[in-house]
Length: 105
Image (cartoon, rainbow, N blue to C red):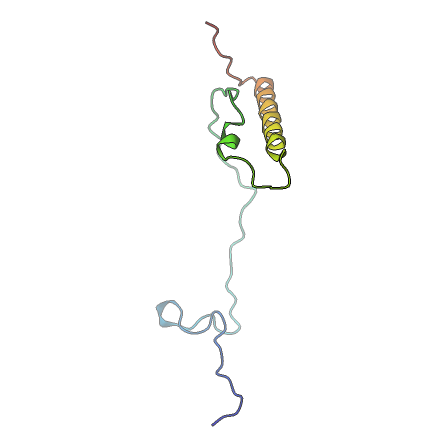
């Protein structure tokens, strides 16, 4: 009986790999091709126009009250942030000339 001897664990990459071959042989380094982050990309397909949100907090309200027991007014603060973001997005759309102006009846 051997005393205090543990069986050896396999290191990642050892043992049987694909095709019945062992993992990387010692001394071999797998070469990876570097990613080309600065390549040319196709132009994005931009929407013709965007419209202002009628109710910017609708999604937020649909989630219910925030689960923050000590902050009863947290929902109001979240709503204020969402409304401000909607106003800024509308202003950016107007500045870019892509804001859809609703037709008056």
